[in-house]
Amino acid sequence: MAYGIEVYNSNGGIQFSTRYVDGFTVIDTGTVSHLASVSYDATNEILGFNRTTTGWIDGNTNSTGTSWNNTSGVTINWLKLKRTSLQTEDSAGDYGIRVYDSAGTNVIYSSNFSKGQKIIDIIPTGSISSTGPAITQSPVIYSGSPSGIYHCPGRMIFATTATTYKGYETAYFDYSTNVIRSRNLVGYDIGFGFIYVGYANKSSIILTKRIP
Amino acid sequence: MAYGIQIRNANDDLTLDTTTVLSNSLVFGTVTINSGTTLSGSYYTGTSSAISCPEMTTTNTDVIEVWLGNNATGQSGSLNEGCTVNRGTNDFTVSFRSLTANTNISLKYYGYRF
Image 1 (cartoon, rainbow over the protein chains, first blue to last red):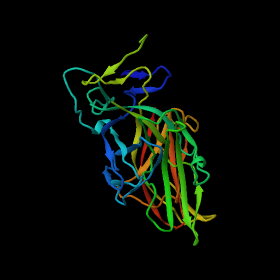
Image 2: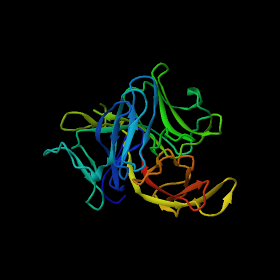
Image 3: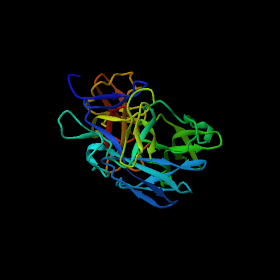
Image 4: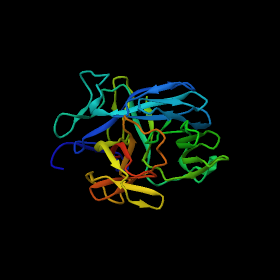
């Protein structure tokens, strides 16, 4: 690296670097009630979900990729991640830190956002798979209190409403054993009921905390 | 705090310290894949052209990953028609398998470092 700035954490993890083209920032947070929807822009936003009680996070993405309907049975917390360069600072002042990419055009890091995130873990693509529909047949992807942890599952298709096919790319928040499980499962109606087949996660899964 | 920097926003929220991990986008875009016409097992499988992703290797999943999401046009219900990320050196491809020949899928992707 001939010029610019790079910042690493104490474990050698990258925080930001002018070598890279962009970052991600939290642009909005909120809650969505059971059977209500939260809108998002699938072209440049990533949704993350958290629930405050033990249970699955289930829902449907509409066919145009503009909203997610909560079918979890409880109110769900959500956050939206967006490319930093596409987001206007909402807490700008005459102080703080703003880092641009090498072209000087994209803001890749800024302290002038009112919300932030802190990545807890990344689950690599193809690394986990459910073995069946039971809770314990979905692998643990996080150990620790699920409180405040948001699950960003990649392809945001969750339980579909189809009568012959169901797909799940969801999470189970377990406050009794303090773990989060990932369910990667498809179900097919074979005429007298569904059979379920696990598959490896197609997208990486981001586990993150929101700030504040 | 023994070393390093802390960055707070205007509300005095700590947005970065020595433990923070953030994601940095290396490459992003949309890829459309056609399942093709070659049947293997029960599936037709197509693969995208190589997508440049600097610093990616076949094994460094601890620092560079790919996130796949539906494009805005959406393919609700197509999850069983699986996609697979194939890691390379400084690039990756995405394979798409379908029960139907010549089926297209459009995906949003981010290659990112963390």
